[in-house]
Length: 337
Image (cartoon, rainbow, N blue to C red):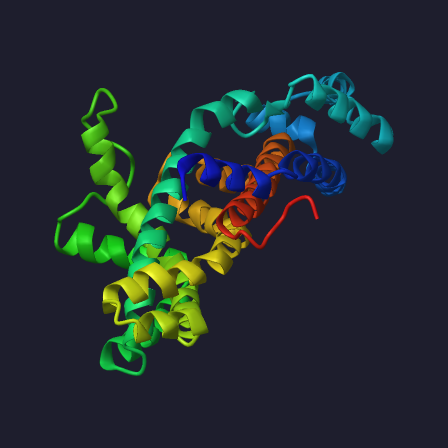
């Protein structure tokens, strides 16, 4: 097939991409509205007085008039629908509010920390995908053998371990006992600037722990999907034609198993993000995970709401990208149907 024909075929598969994007945007609006409303109601139901929280220790010596003035300035005594409408209006103008736990604009908190979380999640996801594709495919090819049985037993064992326990065990072994890797942070305590090589060394343990905690889902899925693909007619026909085992395994069986694997990546993204929150907390990384825990403990509603909405947008975008990738990879899927 010539290159122009391939390009035309790919374009025909994605002919309805614009329609799908518009439909997803229409669905995303009520989802984001419901998420924001739920977060706002929970924040309003909190028994913590935002004025006292903002004042901190000074609240014990501040007069009631000063606290009342803070409440009036923030409008927390207004009816709940009025507060929500004002909050949504500010949100649409790009004003995410003021973080009471960090004492700085929420937008500044997200801008300073979101990149580190994306780096952690992206690197761990890439490691999970490469390792699961390789290990799961080999286990399916040697199904029932010692490698397959050992891999499945290990996957089930790791799947039962909480990610924070894996992180603490990794610190105890590789940082405290062996001294091979740093126990936390992004740089050494004596560093005066951020060095990429230093950051890479400090991310080895967090990335490995996050990838290890998520790998069982993907490894077992690939193992079962490739095992089923090895029994498909086109794979058996490839074997009958005398093609090399590596070509049959990776060029035919694995290629078929990759299609549902794309869906798994999109649906499992929230689990990876949730694991990143715990990993960042255990390893003291300056990402969104640490400030999320701090915001939850301090009832910092503006920061919690912004992080929740950001995570929701990322998940919706990942699901859309998964559907588009599925249509591009499978000629039987048409987005305009």
